[in-house]
Length: 94
Image (cartoon, rainbow, N blue to C red; front, side, top):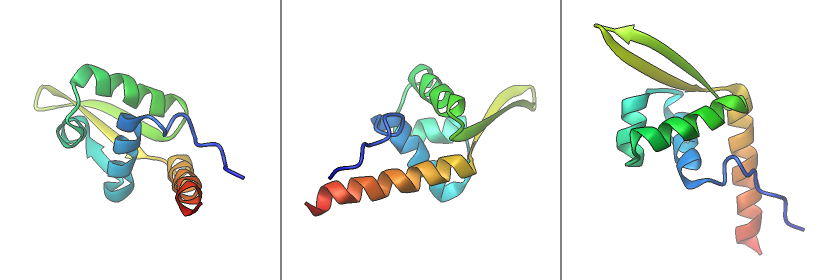
């Protein structure tokens, strides 16, 4: 009756990151950190988990001698997010 929820997206911080990226497509790490009110260490771990499953791409570079990390949602990430939302809606309709 109920579809299993994606355990990767079921984490509050990972879901927040995906929600941000689904609307902006790409964002700097500092922007995501501010919007999610997360610590850099915790966010870094969660971003890595999303990257490992292929939901986001992470690009690290230097800009004006400062490290800059940019996260971008992938097609696989968009599909996973949409499936998660549909599954969650099924829980709410009962």
